[in-house]
Amino acid sequence: MTFEQLYTKFENTNNVCDFYNTYSKNQISTRFLLIRSLDKDNLKDIITMYSKNEPVGHIKDLTKQAYETNVTIEQLLEYIEEKRSQLLVTRQKELEGLSDILSEIPVVNCGVRNDKVDDIVKSFVRNKSIKTYEKLIDELDSSLLQRVRQYCLWSYYNQTANDIIELFFLKHPKVIPTLRKIHDIDFFLKIDDKILPFDLKFTHISDQAREGYFDLISQGIDASHPTFDDYIITKEKDSELNIIRSYYNAYKNSHKKLGLTAASKLTKYDLVSYIAQIGDPVSQDFIVKIENTREKYVPNTSDELKVLEWWNYKYQGERLFCNNNRLFVFVAYKKRFIDGRELKGKTEEIGKKITELLDSLTEESIHEVHYHYDKEDNLVGDYTALSLSTIYSE
Image (cartoon, rainbow, N blue to C red; front, side, top):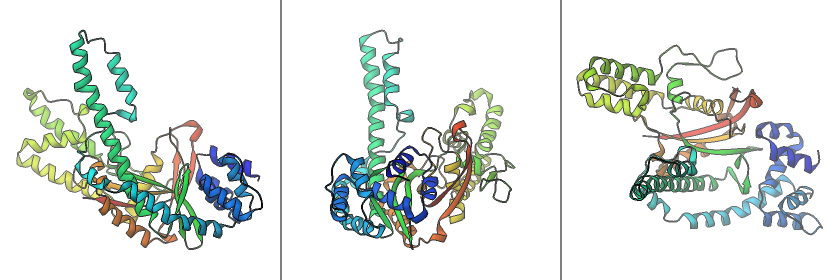
């Protein structure tokens, strides 16, 4: 396998696990990925230190030159470790004081679907119902610019929280940082004599309507079955959403004069909020019951977290599909029917969870996840990946 073949295989793959395992003999994939994770200046250092050649060319050329030297994995690890302190100093300086800014940002819905700011601009410029200049300016100032502002604040909050959290990984001795961006790999984990590439997923637990975690898990899950998937949804029980809708609809049907909105047009949060406002003892008991049940669905143990990890692989979007090893950091509310995005700002508390996870990490604590994927014809197949996770909830 030539460098060019190896490089092309990796750059074009959406199955990093398969790439890593296919070329694992003599640790070829490990050495390649460590070199691939080096920046331009780092590659020049390696070439100068471990060959008689002068470093020349663009970054792909330098990567090839470094790969064709006699540098060993141990020597690469020593070099990366030497660069860790410099990397930490740079990152810490960049992020100094930003936690204080996060605490002041009101966290609300980002206001832009699928991060497509251009969509709301198109909606504005194509609105033919606006017939006066005054109305045009009013629509621009009161609607469009407010939504863009909201989106920018959320994007800043989200990215900055991610960056602060990443520092807890970079500081840990079991984490080998990447010195250059490498697709679908954020760092390597060193466990005994193994070096494993991992992607960091820092996210709230999705509660989308069709394939939301809480609605699937509430229908029942079974791990003892003869299929490739680690779990199947048994559908022996009603989903959380349907239970809440049923209560709301029963009240709506018995109070038709109120002209209540159709349940299908309301979010789970809206439904629960309305039922809580009814105020009668039966409704209050229902809210207590549904909140206590939700709390039980929020994962806590390693086995429970594996189900959530599996769900994230099984139901990932086809547009950005990738089968790679993942370390998940989840945030969730235990009794609130909204996603946990507001909790991302609790960086110190989340950092403690991460440190605890890494301190106790062994090869046995990493989950091997099996899932069948069928959302896209050209992606259909059985996949295997390694995963582990921690969760911060309140």
